[in-house]
Image (cartoon, rainbow, N blue to C red; front, side):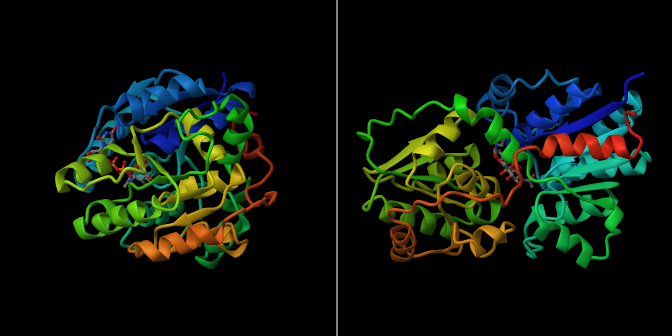
Length: 359
Ligand code: UD1
């Protein structure tokens, strides 16, 4: 009988990360049962990714939806426990640092099903971020910690994690870029092919504090005086901006959430990326664009060390943001291999097989 992997996904970046791994699992003869927690449910945040990335229809959709952390995670935990008991998988595969990741880690480990954590070892060292709590706990109970970088490996070893649990594989988002970037459409923005900045904001600490969001929005409007700013908006951010009645100046181009391929196209065409997202910082590098990060710290410190990313803090003045963007003017560098060679998924499957799963 082929070995069974139960994969837990729920939020937009997890669909992207799962795509290359699902392919590699299928090629190696694994049976994969995809469980969608329903954390993201708008078609533009979920369904469109399944279609574009060729992910299989979820075996179960837990339809948990939005909620406060306790309620959302608890609802996932209850439903995941039942799904894991029913499926009796050999491995539960989890991605990243969302509430879906944590629920998968807890449900599986308490049922004594080994957990494989993809994108393990990331740390912001800011425990006020829900993602930091999710990562710490997921790594603590995972049998396989699949790290994307040597920095991430170092964090786990510093925490006393048994080195045998830590496997460097590279970053699965590099796999996704390798697999899909040829399909990315050239954006049609009506900007006459001129330079633009691409910006996203969605993190709770930025969006849920009105004065922080108002400041960020003002900074983006200030940047837009330098060059047009294209802003695909997460529904959470769109809601908060509407509620606060924050105005968008004439050069701020607000878009709905973008599918993966369109986002890759927008990234490739951008002069610079301005974001509070973890994933986008990395994707910018993977397509050769520099990034200005509106946060006080980042998990992806190697990008900062290598000069590809600069932190301007969560509350930059318009001048600070303009200055950081201007400093990247004419940026052209070929990227190295900070995130591996685009074959992380294959290494993940090989590591599972080497541990006796699926052999
Ligand atoms: C979640 C992750 C974050 C990840 C992000 C990727 C946690 C704690 N956070 O943040 O790490 O970077 O996904 O996008 O797991 N909403 C909709 N439609 C949707 C989904 C959400 O309108 O399809 C709105 C709801 O108002 C909801 C809010 O967005 O309350 C926040 O959604 P939630 O899933 O809790 O967190 P994200 O901000 O998406």
